Image 1 (spheres, helix red, strand yellow):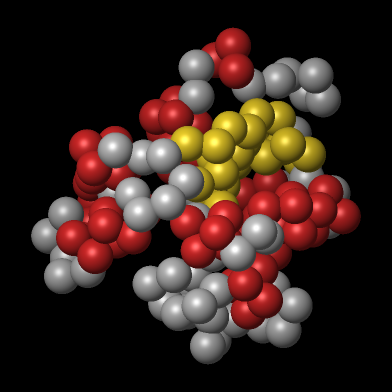
Image 2 (cartoon, helix red, strand yellow; image 1 turned 30 degrees about the vertical axis):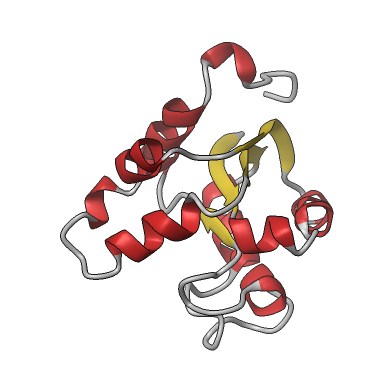
Length: 141
């Protein structure tokens, strides 16, 4: 069983899509091993997205991610990283396949509804950035 990290972003939280998104993950065979609603500070968002610091969209991304609460999750399942990325769809919702989360719930490239780890290495770093080990269930492992 793999674990991966997922964020339901501010636009999807404000649009009351948390339940729809979690239901989709569960329907597709992923389990929620940890979840919490949080309002990210500027510092926490900047630290999370540090690899994008030199990109022109960094400030806009941080502003968006701190604009409203987010749902932070650890998802678990077979091939969880790859599975989550398939369920989310392409980063740009205009390019996302039908019935993917970004096609269904994103408003734009910048407000693309969900984030998911792109590798096991990223998943480990991202989970540890937001969760203490005692907050993540090993019940299904």
